Length: 368
Image (cartoon, rainbow, N blue to C red; front, side):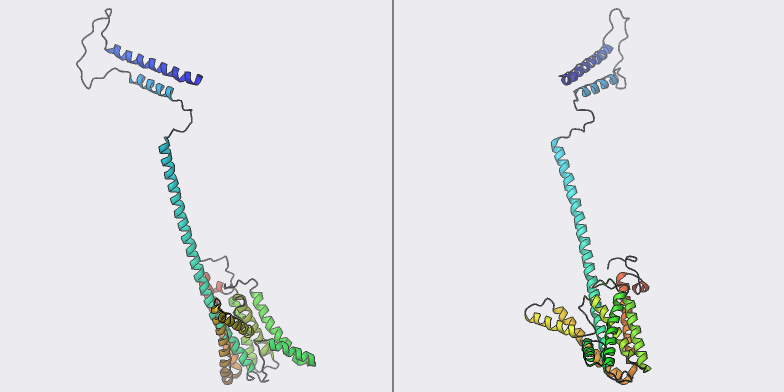
């Protein structure tokens, strides 16, 4: 009741004040009473004449009346009609949806662009790995053919430095017959091949399949030095069979590298596993499963490159004799240089960083 009485009281007071202001305005124009002195007649009307009306009082009355009729609590937001409020909410919601749609569209475009760039990069690296694997397979076939030709060293020894299944068998037979010299030789050959693979693992302790690391280049350099040292020993007809041990170590190193990078798909030094995979994949294709046909082509290329390397080695060793392994050292060095250049281009680093590194996390370039 009190909340109702107060506005009504204000309204009545405002009305009284308004009437009082109007009476004062009328009195200004009314004639004077008998007690007053006679007044001169009013001046003729003129638009420029000022009318003595108290507009300030009327404005105060109007504001007072409006405040008396306004029952909205102080500090409340202005009252908006429901239609206008619904329309404003609808506009805000439509604008919010449009912004979200644009952001989602930009995000999808960025994700698709990044995915396409990543796929192109993976294809480039896989293609380089296959080409490098074919070259390494040719190199291993060349070295193995030269060492098995009997023309590389003055001892006329014929030793395989690529596949070591036979070496394990020979070592076992020598152990059984008590031939200590033969057992010692094949044991050192096996240890040389394993040592070369250990060097590749030492230089690349955390390899990522399908990605060139910053130490692949130096690994190729070490392999090239091993083959160069083997060539020098063969040329000088050094006593002993260290020439074969060094060649075996170089093959073990390159086989370890190719296995790490391709997740054991490419094994460039021995064809036992490759031949097994070729037969298995061929059977799958004949059975109707052609998903891994590309692997069959890759493995067939490796086997062909290894065979071609063996054929080339015979031509080289018959003409150049002990200098034939010098070609392998240079070829191995060329593969390493190509690996360094490819890494520098792909990772957007300098040639020096593409070789010994480290560059991972230091020189990130723009996406390809």
